[in-house]
Amino acid sequence: MLVPNTTIIGGLPFKMTNEDIHLAAKEWSFESHLETLSMSIRSEYGNDRALTYYFTMVADWLLDIQGWTEKQRDEFKYNLGSALYFFVRYNRLEWIDDPCQSVPVEFNVNGVYYHMNFDCKEYMTANDCLGECRYTLLEIAIKPGLPWALRNWVVIHELTHAILFEANYTGDHNDESLVKPLGTLIYRFLKDNPELWRTTQNQHGDVDKTAPDDVKPCQATTFDIDQLADRIMDKIADKLATQAERGLNNAGL
Image 1 (spheres, rainbow, N blue to C red):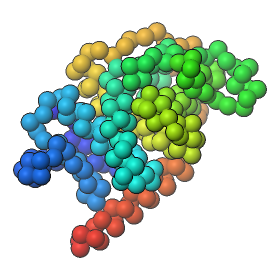
Image 2 (cartoon, rainbow, N blue to C red; image 1 turned 180 degrees about the vertical axis):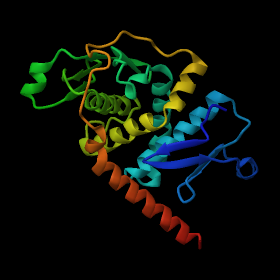
Image 3 (tube, rainbow, N blue to C red; image 1 turned 60 degrees about the vertical axis):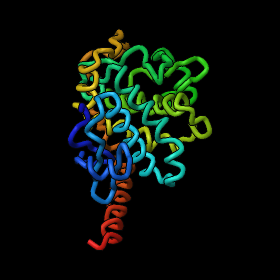
């Protein structure tokens, strides 16, 4: 399977374990445990099916970190997981951790193409914002001239709006209290697991190689994206650690 042995989610390493006998006995396809930071998928599945279940578990953890109840997660994790798998499989992503790469001019979001618009400086300045997701126009508008790392974070943030919308979560897809931390988690997930999307794209060979945007290759920047994400990630790590400790206590360990 293409599923990685270790996945970093919210700063914590989740290990892939072999639980075929346990899963078969329960007639389950996959399972994950926060208390042991582990995930398991039945080894009989091929790459596409295994990756589908893998991204469902990733989505489940992302939503759990957000504070969603189990019932809420069960209602949406499959849609979000499928959308994340689609996003990773069909979009060029090396620009996330390589300053010599530019953002594509369009992104495939669950089969819908969103075009990038960097020609909106006056609008962004007048409205005091760095980016905007325009669902009707199928457009992601980004203020031009942002430092490389900040630009990348803003792009993923706006694409998170689009992912939620195209995954049919149209109730709170514009709720910044939801999208800001979730977008940061997705950004860090992509940055912390580059071999995942490289391997997935190399295997399928169907990533869209689009033209670059207006950002010059290897543009220097002094902006540290971790400064922007520190508060969010610290809270996430604390919450995960607390939940893991409670799980161990409940298990009598």
